[in-house]
Amino acid sequence: MKKVAIFTEGQSEQIFVRHFLEEKIGWERISFRCLKLYSNTLFDVPFSHCSSNADVYFLLINVGNDEKVLSAIREREEELIKKGYEKIIALRDMYSESYCRRSTRQISDSITENFLSHWRSTIQTMSEPSKISIQVAIMELEAWFLGMYSIFEKIDSKLNIGYIQSELGFNLRSVDPQKEFFHPSDTLNSIFRLIGSQYRKSKGEVENICSKIKSTDYCTTFMDGRCSSFKEFYQELLTLAQKT
Image (cartoon, rainbow, N blue to C red):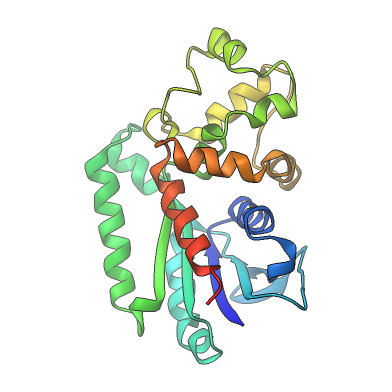
């Protein structure tokens, strides 16, 4: 059985990956275990899944800090590879305090590329860099949610494309969220406020959003040419899950 470890910067990303695997690969073909890193110790968190017919085992580790994703991998990569893990993936947001300081709170392609180059160079200093990769949600995971715009009507029928545009001034069908929104979680919160709710990255809120995303939503976002960072993530995970 193929083994893959995915280190996420936070709980939201871990939940998203779990839902993605369930929806796109399927319960029967995967097993996974979810862990949280706290004070350099790994703890089990809800929830894990085991299938007797699994082709791939995923270890999903929430590091709890965007700046520590790669260092957490560095500390564990040799042990994981010895245990048979074929691939180790880092998943984090581009948005960070460091990015804000350098960009004056605007999306900059050159600054984005500088960060990506630095992280890739860091991976090259690890023991087996060919087995390690980084996927980055630009600017945040929530940009990927915004790219899957049909989910909002599933949350509340009021949240259709036209209503969101009339109230907030952008058309989610035509904008590229990773180029349009510097802080996508704030944009998501603005959408939820239209129905008297809010988005604060809580476990329940992320679980609720992910539960509305179906395989067709992932496919549409992959195919329509927007959120290229999601496309890279999608391609890597589905390639890893292919039967050999």
